[in-house]
Image 1: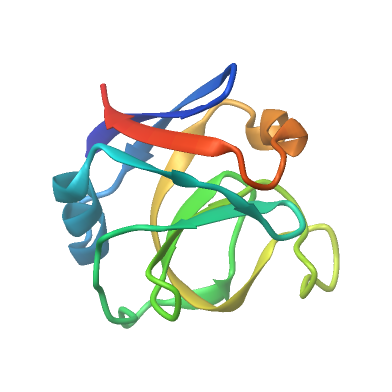
Image 2: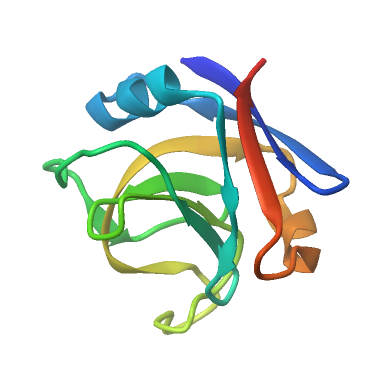
Length: 123
């Protein structure tokens, strides 16, 4: 596991990257900085990592999970329902590789505007 910090403006969240093929690629690419795109209660941003969908890729994700979206080469942070959700749980647009989890309450991300700068660093 790799411990990371996600910083968006005044918000700082600790998270863990799991030891998965995609998780290792993302940990090796740190630090990352990009402009956030909001999609419902998901923030995502393109990163310089290329990974195919893993065997356990899925669209159903949990609040607080971190995932990689192969279609968009994107780092995704889920904190609530998205436009394709059928209930209160998040749902990715298409299958993602879940590689980590926020430690703490990801609901603080609800105040992050589209276009905010996001930094992801090792702690």
